[in-house]
Image 1 (cartoon, helix red, strand yellow):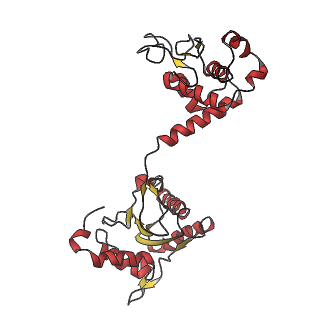
Image 2 (cartoon, helix red, strand yellow):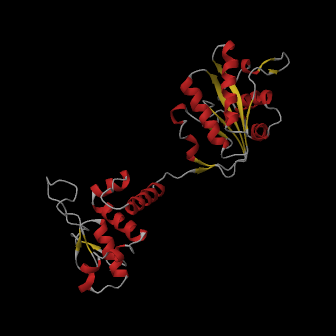
Length: 299
């Protein structure tokens, strides 16, 4: 017996509800989807079912139920738990009520029903979220088209950049270095900046390292100025100047070659840009600790 006193009618011992005949309009306007409550009566909408649940919990005698559910003081006792459970049950058996819950279209009832529908929607979405992968590294490198295999290196693709951060649990990550292509293409630039701002919310420090000049050399300064705007909303973000002189010839960093597909080459580039950063130390350990053949495979 249902603990709240309501059981679906239909068949199997009846499948849970009365099935609509072919061609009938969905919407329960004819009262097709219903529950048989604890008193043996049919409830054709969530409010009716919730009031019957309340009556059962309040131990109202069967002969007084139909009177009490119309009493205003009794109706005021109706709580969120009864509303939520009644909506859940009707959403399970009736597509129309499921749609009303997910779109917030329960306007025929009081505002408390809208709140219950919102709670049910939130519960359903949370329960059905894809599982996140846990990053088990304190210091990580993130970048585009890197093509290397490492537990501390994560590749992000343009097609998924807007939702990429949500795929992971970030609790163990302290610092992140992000290799970004220096581009003036507005959509790509905004996507990368948004990614950096989102990751900055999860870690102690983010360092943005320019990699691969995807703009004219005389446009580099303008792109850098755009990137520096991220510090207004994310104070824990550091932007490496792409014109920083590096190497024995003191050429601008952005003109140095970054080769994907080789962890050694990526580490060599990072040593030019951020030589003392813990991410560099972490990756150097991996370079010296694993056979070369293991590091050329794509991630």
